[in-house]
Image 1 (tube, rainbow, N blue to C red):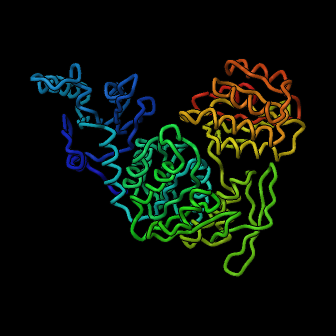
Image 2 (spheres, helix red, strand yellow):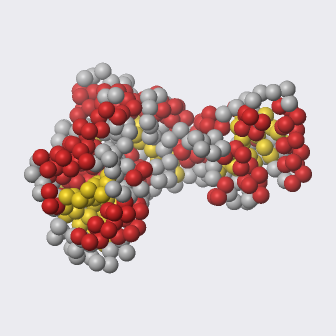
Image 3 (cartoon, rainbow, N blue to C red):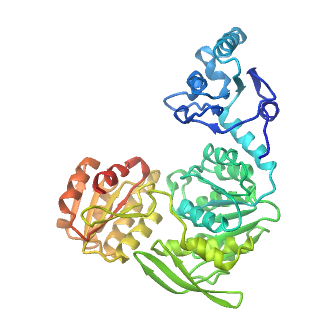
Length: 481
């Protein structure tokens, strides 16, 4: 593992060492004082409702040996005053008295400092870095790619969806003896993917699709495409871009010939692509297909059902071939990959009801895919429990109505909805022929739990899908037992 010293941080971030030793080395960087272990580095962030910079004493008490803090947070009223140095001297004296071996680094902006330190660390390594972005499917694609890459490399991957302006740098700073990285890059606004890509400097970039997530912030799918293409801003000169050629926006961009000078590899099931399957068979317990590679025919098995996981696996095949992983190992990685929790997590409860927990997040594209999966599986009755999709702005009514169309199209037997916007799902589902007697409109999750427990029967299948803020995990926890 290559070391980063406090003196490096001072230079990189134009920081100030309030107390401690500049020859001390950076250790595991933690943002939550509840997770601090002996010898860790604590970094504070100022949030909307609280300021983590003010918890440095708690971090030190729990064993942190280094704290990286935003200087302004430590000053009275956050103001630059003539008493600034006197205030900092008092803080220094207090820390040295109780924690004489601790080092405290002051920076102007801890988010920016974290990004600068992560970029510095990334530059110390010449290893494969795979960056993944897209409107939907980033986490599941990351999981399957990491599984394939692990057949040849010791892989560091994004935990959960730690994919934002803080999460991605923290992931890179976890790098120790791994020799490959697979990271997600998420965004809410323009220029965020660009920032992340310039930090990670991927050797391979993946765009899973361009859908409607965050369309309320970006205004159009064309703008979402531009935001996803920002991943090219940090892609190395000899890097490779891998794209889903079945996605209409990416396909049209690709065939327009107005794209990047980087090499592009395509995968898809419909449009002619570099990596394509045939004889695809979908089932609730997974999918199989055939693929021809290097003059041989291979059978591919995926343990999770749904068309979108076939596409994920094709992407993983493309990645595996870029890094010369044996085909048999690629297929083993695909067959045995494990999904992050709350993403198409399929379990049965004590009453033999199949519960599909896909409640981490939701947009129209992921709702459509989940409803198609529910529609395909074998079950006595199919119950969709759907909640609001957020951050859709003026497009919210239209996109919730489109979800209602998907409910009717996929022969869902019963619909349970929670949330203000979900009423538009109901109105369109009714318009498209769903029986009003099979629809339940709930004020909150508690009411939904009571309804689900009342109506569900053995051999039913229940899908839970909503934006994360709707906290549908609460519903899952209540009905799984």
